[in-house]
Length: 526
Image (cartoon, rainbow, N blue to C red; front, top):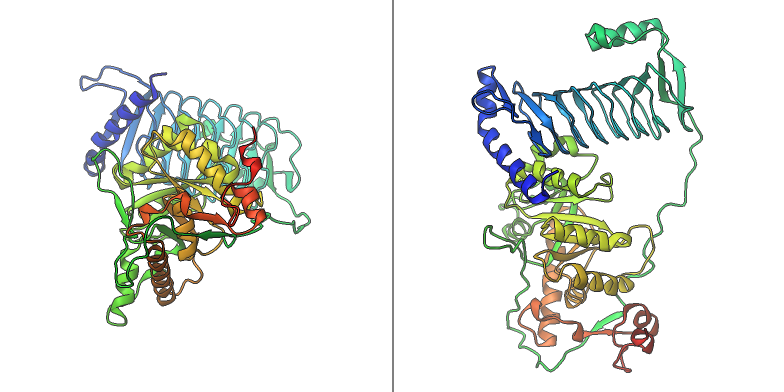
C-alpha cells in the first residue's frame, strides 16, 4: 500500500474532480469511471479511500481496483459498482445508494445505514450491517463476527457461513442466513422462515442467483429480561477545590477591557480560524434552540449569534456538528450549513489510522477541507486521542472527563497536561476538555491556566434567552477574574496562577497547595 499522505492526497483530488461532474452525468444518464484512463485503458486504483461521499440521486459510478475504507458513504440515491475489493465502512451511513462490490469488503460494511441496498459478492469482515436502521444488505460468501450487531431495522441476507455472535444486541430487523450459523447470543432467536417470508424476500432480491431456499433460517430479536444496571460512574468532584491567585501583576481598573477570545484552526495560513468570543463550545441538542428574534431582544440575539456551539442537529453556519452513529446518514444535510465537524470517537467504532483517514477525507469533502475538525474521546484513552489527533492534523483534541472512570476533574489536569506536552507540543492540534457539568467563568479561567485551549460542556438550560444570560454571566465573571489577576488577555493565564485549596486537590492535581506554596512532595518522587 502507498504512503498514507500520498493516498489521502490522491483520494482528495479524485473527489474534487468528480464532484462537479456527478450531477451533470446523472442528468445525461452517464456512468463515471474510476480506474480507467481517458483512453479506456485499465489503471486500477490502489488504496484510495473516502471516495464518492453523498452520491446524489441518479448518479452512477464504476470503480476498478483495490479500494480503501469509507467508499461511497452517506449515499443519497446514486449507484456504485466496484470491480475489486474494498476496505472497511463500505456504504457507511447509506441513505439511498445502490452499491455492488464484486469481491470482498472489509469490516463495518453498511454501518449505520438507513436506506438503500449494498450487495457484496465475495464475503465480508466483522460487524457488517452493525447499527443499521433500514435498507438491505446482501452478502454472498462468509461473514465475520457480529453481523447485524445493534441493528434496529432492515434486512440482511447471507449466502454463506456467518461468524460468532450474529445479531448481538439487535433490537429489530432480520438476518436471513443460507449457510451455517452458530448458536445466537442472548437476546437473539433463530427460527425458520415462513413460505410467505421466502417469497417476499426473493421478490425483494430480484435476482435468481441470489434467491434464498426454503430451509434458510432467520435471526430476530427475542424477548429477554430488562435489567437496570448501575450505569456509568460519574466524576467525583468539580473544580471548586482550585483557586486563582495573582502573580506579580497589579489589579486592572474596573473599566478596563480584557480579551477573552480563543481561536480554533490556526494552521499554516491556508484557512481562516474560527474565533470564539469565549474559550468554550457549549453543546446543545439542536441549533434551533439558539434563535432569538432581534425584535424581541437584540442584545441577547447578538450574544447567541456570535457564539459557536456543538450540536447534533440543525447547525447554524458557525456551529460544529457532532457526528456519531445516530446521525451518520444525515451528515450531507448537516454539513451543508455548518462551520466545523466534531467526531465522537467514543460512539463511533474503533478505527485504525487508514480508516480514520477515510472518514476524514469523505466527510471534510462535504463541508470544505479548510473547516476545523475536532476529535472527542474519553480521558482513559487520552494518549491515543492526542497521538491520533496530531497524526491526522486535527485542529482540536477534546478529552471527555465523564468516560465512566469516575476520575475527578482536578486529577485529569496533569494527565491532559503530560499527554499534551508529549504528543501535541510540536503539532498545530490544540487541547480541549469536555466537562460533565455546565461551566462558569471560574472554571474557564482555571482550565485556560492549565493549558487547555477550549472548554466544551453541557448547557444548564436550552431556552435561548436563558442561554444568552448564561453566556453573558460567564463573560462578566471571566472578565472580573482577569482584572483581579491583572491580566489583559485570557492567554496570559498560566499555571502559576493556580492553587489547590485543600490537601486532597493538591494530592491529585500536582498544583501548589495554598499556604504551603509548592506541590506536595510526592509529585517530585520518581
